[in-house]
Length: 73
Image 1 (tube, rainbow, N blue to C red):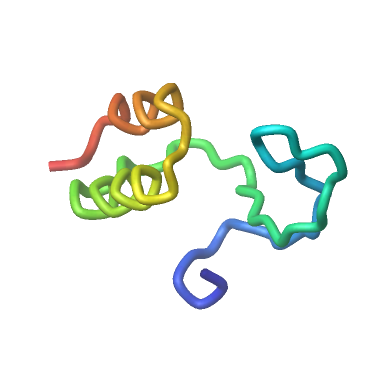
Image 2: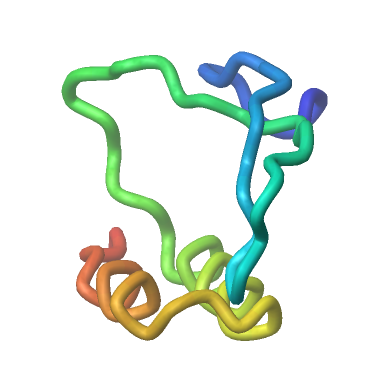
C-alpha cells in the first residue's frame, strides 16, 4: 500500500481477534489522514474494496457501509 496510496500513515497498534480473542496482538495498520473535498472512488476501486471485505468475511454492517458509498462516473 505504501507505493500505491498516499494520505495514510503506518502504525503498529494492539488489536483483538473476534470470537473470544482475549489478549491483544500487534498489527500493522494504515490510518487515513483527515482530508476535505475527497473525490469519489471510481467504480472499479469500490468493487475491489467490497470484494476484499467479502473475501475476509468482514461484518455485514461494514459491507453495507461500503455498498452505500457513491462511486464516480
